[in-house]
Image (tube, rainbow, N blue to C red; front, side):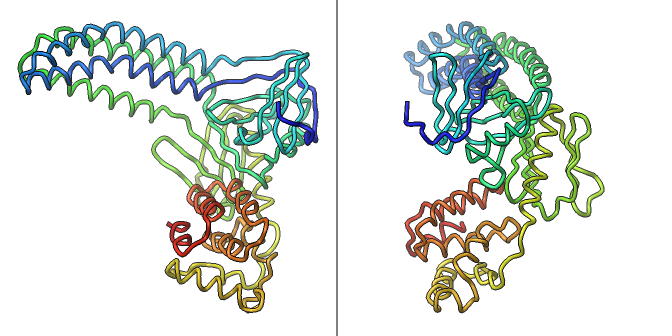
Length: 418
């Protein structure tokens, strides 16, 4: 286990649970592949064998299609395992010692210890109901729940990990376990009916020697598209809360809500209501009761932080204003070279403020990041990475990450604003 001397906060939890929805999604894909893969491969081999008059391909098609029934049963097995992996948490009950710090999280129960590096933790949220716990999202689609005594204790745990609203965005699925299970079994019923029909259509596929096999191949392709579309539409709503606003990701749409236009955040039972300026109808999102309240608290706290402090005078000089990226870079360099920022009335602290100002236009924040890199500020990369990790705006985050990672050359501004 790595050195864990920098773990600044400790607590004792009576329950730690982990779920693996990411692995469940992988198994769902394997279920679809196992079910339709043999049929599709056999159909294509039959078509090619007919078109090329190849007895070898025709024999191969018969051999592949003979495995279609086994593939169908394997698909059902994969789907059932996917359900168990997604909805059955691995739970540790009893006293679990939890230690957290900038380097990661350590879970200790008796003689057994588990170490989770900080880099493996994507985001965290304090959920107050029905029992207070910290919900951590890990890489690979894993989810970890640590029960805590109070919301304050959960907040301190997140702060020790550097997962507060000022340091990192949080992403949460608004689906409930109950609704997910209902959707799963409904999908399974449709899956079995459609696949049963598809199997009946392909029972004698290897016997076809004319173009009617093409029609049946089309039916199979339509089923694959139907499965993909159904899965996309059934995907739960995802909410991303950043330092600069809220991103609502529905299956077929995305809504970006900067804090400047977000006038009210309310909860009503299991509903989260987001009210926009100039719009009488709130964005109505359904979530589990505790999750709705937790997200409302996180949004209010992040919006309150975003409202602090006025922008320094002269930071408008950092904005792109339609300039060519190369010209923009040179203008930024002139600001830097003109007697240590004073031509624009700026200091290094002003530029850092512009980078962290969540109310600022995106190009101003990108310009601040580029100027910090051009100036060779020692901690520039770390400052830019923190700003990128905290924003919920995907395009701005990608631009800031490029500004942090690129070794600045003539093409860097163009890559950053692309």
